Length: 139
Image (tube, rainbow, N blue to C red; front, side):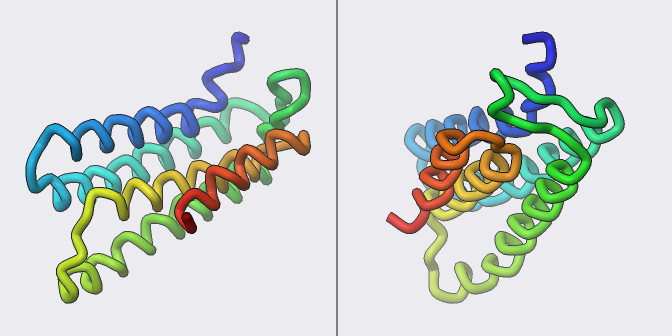
């Protein structure tokens, strides 16, 4: 349990998703704020992921269900950069068609979280959890 800080990017994104949902419920017209906060959350998660690269070479967690190594960290960073670019590029589309909703960045973040869980998985049930999290945006 002392290596729980190695899954800090996933924990941070999941807590941020819950915060953004609560922010969208209790604050009126918070879609632009939610969108900008989600971009900031992705940047913070990328810096946390980069920082964990230098601390370990290969670690397994939760009875060898999750593997943290350099390859998984690289793939997580690529996923986070891709998610950031998706949000930035889709910003003009959302402005054009007036589709700014709080759900869009939250669904993108949950999809990124699912991809990050799938990248680190070393067990079939953890991979399935990540797959379901990622496919939540399709529903």
